[in-house]
Image (cartoon, rainbow, N blue to C red; front, side, top):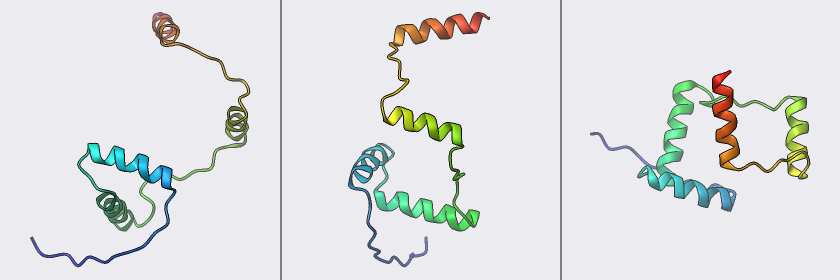
Length: 91
């Protein structure tokens, strides 16, 4: 396999996001550097961001804001969800 020239780059990242991402990537045997190289390769191949980037519509923005403020949130346990799913499947 031919040698690939590598170059050091400094970037600023959200520290918490970086920590969480590194944990997830480690489960795949990937380093943060590997993941960034995969992303950049896909940017080049797709000639753009390799996934949809969309702003939420007005209704979704409103719901997200309410959730952030703790409004209109209902506690649900797993048993209740399973019951509703089974009941919905029979309909």
